[in-house]
Length: 394
Image (cartoon, rainbow, N blue to C red; front, top):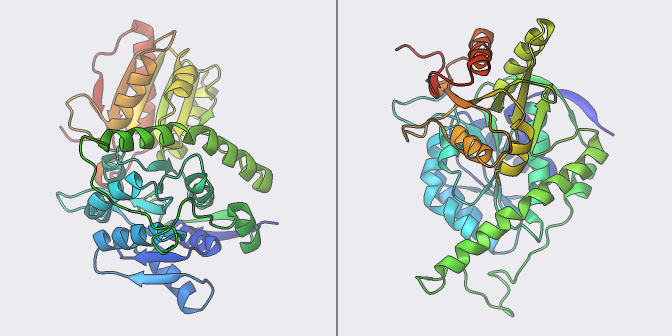
């Protein structure tokens, strides 16, 4: 039984955390994530969760406390944004290397400088190689659903990796939308009881070493095991999504396609911009243009084989990046999509559009311009410029 209510993205994330009812939450506020831990603290104060709530003096300490709690053998969570994630950096890697199944909502926000509080993906794209599973959400419903599924994915015996669940700062975190929510009981039944996968720090009968020194003698073996765990996450993500669909009727995959099957021109995008692009696809379809959309949900592990199969038959593909890599050759999403296409049987031209940095709006005209460019690339077979900046004053 599901209830339909109106919530902001932050309220939905906090509600999902309440229904998950973790053993430990370490909290430090940062805009635009602050509301998540603030609302969750009310659940703690009102006795609605069993959680040990730890207030700390920084995000570095928040992740450190969460890692310590998870290593002690409990279900542990925290939340952050932007500079907060950057300040966690050192410990974010430690969480992954210890294969601790921590789940963390991240409200995407630009990294300084200049100082900016609005949404782009520079924070989590910077953490893309930290060994965390990364799941992006288009709207409040997806943020809620993804957070619940992330618990099952992270704690699966074949995965045991931490997971970030993202939503766009202010665009989703502070905007109110209708969504369907599960009962507390259904969420608890879906995620199941936490089962420690190894002796914990507090198990004195089975002592273990956590955080050991490993130089060239064993360091590579640790990293290889992390890579194997990440590679093994894809089927688990799909299996958890299948079971979640049976419970809720809402289906998720590694990515979602919209009118892509017969599309000649395709855009690849993450998060909330997918809704804007979908409107333009509908508009172009009415004009007889074969436009389509691929919205990536799971960025880590990167579904390179599946993307190549989905995009290989297009005449031209554009990737929309809400972050820059400063490589001189496009954003992080573009470089990975383009690399995935290298092994495709048919390899369409793939171009990049960096957009929306620091929360700059992307509108229908911007998306129309991208499809117009794709039509010209499809006609000529080549792009005049591979990397483009959308909506920037130059």
